[in-house]
Length: 322
Ligand SMILES: [Zn+2]
Image 1: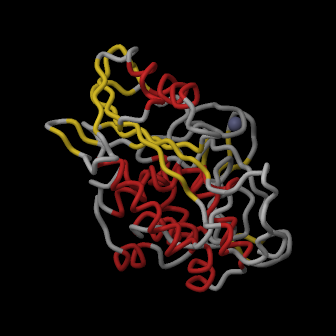
Image 2: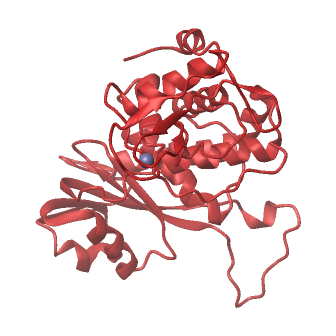
């Protein structure tokens, strides 16, 4: 499946179209389990009285498609229990914003979403964060084996250039730069980044051990001494010397990590301007997702996100004036 934004607009002319589209993407030709009681395929479609739309509690017409479970007698829609659940934002808007976030190489800022779809700043911000939730890798992602590159970078502005900057005391932190450790699977291109408190040996090791089947993996890093002890646990450990400008030697390379970091920094500087430390992990999830799926088309990437919208932790409440 590969469609462009014009074809998507053709498919989603009405809000009811968007519900059908999302049902296809999430449920496919199979049948959903009831989000309330978990019973499979025991539901029937509730046809609105006038055949088209139903009245909401406030009396306005809604094109929401509602199903009813025969087992527990409760109603649900394709939105129940997903990142879209309980929002007043039209499903059409959600799908288009997801398409945008999946197709923009450097990401799309909440400000751009706000302008493009005429939303309030809070709503745009809320949507972007919920969509990032769906971009996160599966909680039980498998361990990586084969060739794994590990590298670190520092993300964050130069504090002295920032508005309202107050010099820290001599003993205080001199910078608000945040270290990030990134693992890249050389064979598949899968990327797993995370914000780390520091780049000490134990810290780098824990991210590696949580993600890599180290006995069956070759580790590629720069010559940073932090990798010495952990490197010995791996099948092999090869290093390149960044200090002497070396990024590639024979088949040893940390180039992929350097490319990832430069894209990430370009996006943060150009699109997002400043990312607070607390949100950096979520932005990393978005960038990891795009990097991991870079060989897919925009619409294939969107289909992946739509398929992952169920069963995600919901961490943001919708702003009151959506
Ligand atoms: Zn049920």
